[in-house]
Image 1 (spheres, rainbow, N blue to C red):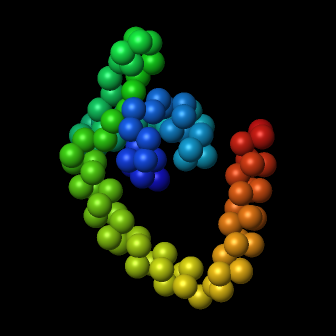
Image 2 (image 1 turned 180 degrees about the horizontal axis):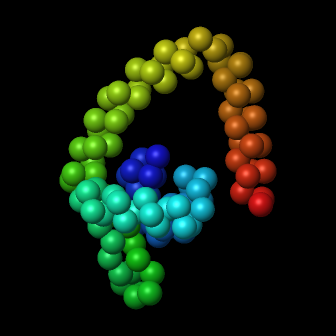
Amino acid sequence: MALFELDQQPGINAATLARACLVTPQAMMILLKTMEQQSLITRSSHPRHPSVLELHMTEVGREALHNARERVDPIERRVFGVFAPKDMAVFREFLSRFIEAFEGE
């Protein structure tokens, strides 16, 4: 999930990434340290706000994301393919409400 979000929002900070992944900032920091050690990401100072670290995916990270998508995409198609479009709309609405409730804490 973290690599997917970094692909969608290059340069985001750790707090924003934590919210997008529905984890605590502390949990995200542990994950980011591991991801950096594995050369999946880099951290660099924001040009205008030196105390803010921007996160960027490396080529190794992009390859890992690509490999993960190749494995996950067929599973998602199989799982979600059993639902009618109307059912998927209801499912998305329930998920949206769940996320809103979670973020309200």
